Amino acid sequence: MKKDFFKYQAQTTPHPLAMEISHAKGSYIYDSKQKSYLDFVAGVSACSLGHQHPKVVTAIKEQLDKYLHVMVYGEYIQEPAVELAKLLAQQLPESLEKTYLVNSGTEAIEGGMKLAKRATGRSEIISAKNAYHGNTQGAMSIMGYEERKQAFRPLLPNVNFIEFNNFSDLDKITSKTAGVVLETIQGGAGFIEPTNNYLKAVKRKCESVGALLILDEIQPGFGRTGKLFGFEHYNIVPDILVMGKGMGGGMPIGAFSCSTELMNLLQDKPKLGHITTFGGHPVIAAAALATLQEITSSNLIPETLEKEALIRKHLQHPLIKEIRGKGLMLAALVDSAEVCNEVILQSQDKGLILFWLLFEPKAIRITPPLTISNDEIIAGCNIIINLLNNIQAKMA
Ligand SMILES: Cc1ncc(COP(=O)(O)O)c(C=O)c1O
Image 1 (tube, rainbow, N blue to C red):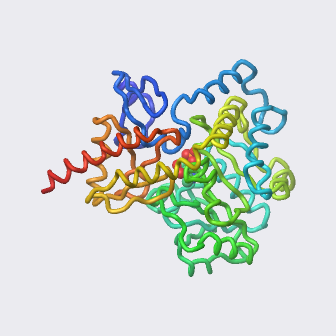
Image 2 (cartoon, rainbow, N blue to C red):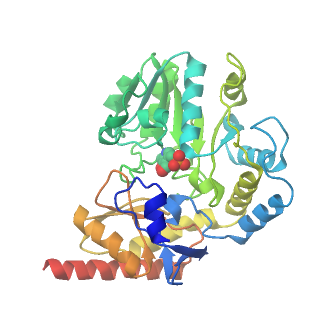
Image 3 (cartoon, rainbow, N blue to C red):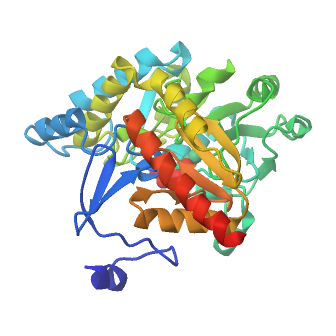
């Protein structure tokens, strides 16, 4: 299988971890030799309810027996998609009552950017340095990391960047700006939280110049930070909310939500302002609905903060300089990129899954499923501490 993986399946990472998967359940992934791995990454924050959550699996199976794809997005009334959009509206502020379901995070970003251009009649999009919003060419245009996009230019024109948390940069948001796209908590940059009412200031500035604020909640969203969405911590409501990843309970999905008035603009001048064949797919919507029902009807959201405290308590080591983030969106910042690589690569041998962040080479990603138990958290942290002890001993 490994040979065929390298021969036939495209990879863009030079060194794939290449673990051969047998199955996955709860907080564990099993390889083809039936070795278990405690999952501290959750498919990069996508498997919010762990692996094979029974309610998600049941919802998928029940939908499989009814119908699969029947029509392009938005033409027919399909219960899973309608119920998902309705439950989302019930959980969100009134001004975010309408949801467009798409297939991935990057596509949801595309939809949000297009809507901001359509709504304002302007073309400038502002985003943040070190931001990541996806890999299609629109989303890549607003990625704040030149090295990874240079080869694909020309990208979108009229894209400008501000530094996250820098108040004086807000002057760059002007009456030419269609939309400001920010991650509520910056992910790839190193799990950087907005400080000192920064997002409030951004929102105020957007309002004053008639630009729309688009918040990318693809990582913090769906309960990971102690609220259903990260923006709820910061006393603001975006004009457009973008979500994905953990929304699907392990299935591919994205969405953007806004007011009915705003969303209706995509029906007019031109009509079909955003279209997609598979958006709102019934099986995937059923999985997302079961995920949202479980997250909002259990204690999983408040428990993320208790689990954060447990991780912070058990992850103390001289080689860990800082733990950034909120809830179960955490990153341990270590001494050097070398230490980071060693921990991540060696953890696999010890039966623990860890991973990198995109643009911060000293950060170890800790984003386990929300369903992880306290014992599993302590076990995983102990593996990390033991690895760091070994690395420190070698350094001495
Ligand atoms: C903050 C953020 N935005 C957008 C995306 C893109 O989502 P997708 O990979 O589903 O297209 C990601 C994916 O990592 C992300 O972390």
